[in-house]
Amino acid sequence: MNRLIDKIIIFALSLFAMNSILRGTAFLVCVYVAIMISALNYYLIRGERSDFLMKPDSGGEWCAFFLEIIVAAVAVYYPPAASLLPLLLYDVVRSRNYIAGALSMAAFIYSFATFGVYQTVYIIIISAAAIILSIYSERMAIISKNYRSIRDDSSEKNDRLRSQNLELLNARDTEIYNAQLSERNRIARDIHDNVGHTLSRAILQMGALLAIHKEEPVHGQLEDVRKTLDSAMNSIRSSVHDLHDDSINVKTGIYQMAELLKDNYNVSIDIDVGENMPRAVKYAVIGITKEAISNIVKHSSNKDVIISLNDHPSMYQLIIHDYNDSGNDAAISGKISKNSTGSDTGMGLENIRSRVESVNGNLTITTDNGFRIFVSIPK
Image (cartoon, rainbow, N blue to C red):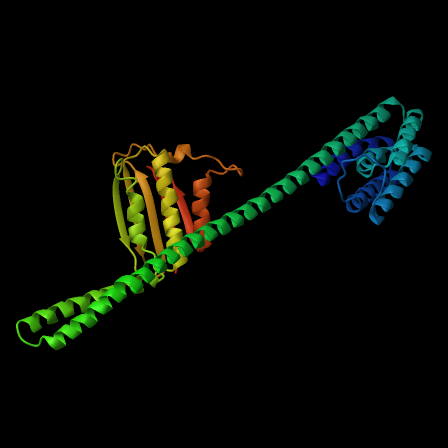
């Protein structure tokens, strides 16, 4: 419970004791002193402690420590001030001021002789309630503080894991890209060194034959062969150039991955994108599609799958949806495993989320009539 509310409750209960013990000016003075002491201690005693050692740690706590001793001593020598003890003991528990606590016990003893049993018992009951309330509030504050610390630590670890996962995904993409580029360069080099040189030699030989055989129809036939060789050489040059080019065919990649679905699902694929899509976006789209198809194969009992990738003026839009035309939903929404944070995102979906974040995109997942992934990636 909030400490300010605690003190208001204790003060309200203490007013009955003050009113029954004190009259006139003494009553008003006691009320003002109670308000002043409560406000000062509320300001001076700040932290919560799990130990029970009497060790003030700051100047404010020392001031509160001596103030409590003074008030308790006054209650011993002036028994009517015992009505302040419930509020005082609430703070004594927080400050671990055992000296003030002992003086308060002495004040209770003196009050028995001064006021009688009923007023004293009432003050003792309120004081006991104040002590219990203070201990409970302190424990709740410590638990709340520990919970926030654990939550923040967990959030920080999740952010760090997400960042490391994204780095691993990017590193894997880079490794795949470098391997593909290295293989393309090897193939291009082999074509250039072997087939290209052979064709060049054949073209030179054909030129020599054309120079020797100028009579028809042999010359015309040789000219046709030379043109064919020139066309083949141009095709080789174009192929070698394409192999050296930094190109990833998203459309081909998606169609190849969708082959896994065709035996068990009715697959509809709609891809309309240009060749100028950034490489990072291409890898993100391929990775997202791969994870989504893997989830469908593992978990979905539906029969229809849509894969749509479109190039809009301001963004790329990817939609992957498994559903039933009949409306009988047997999707994977109920089979998604929970991760360490308790959210409905398994490792596959977490990888999808990381892929989307890597290109500053937005991800929306719905489970109405199947599992639907909607991704928009700004240009």
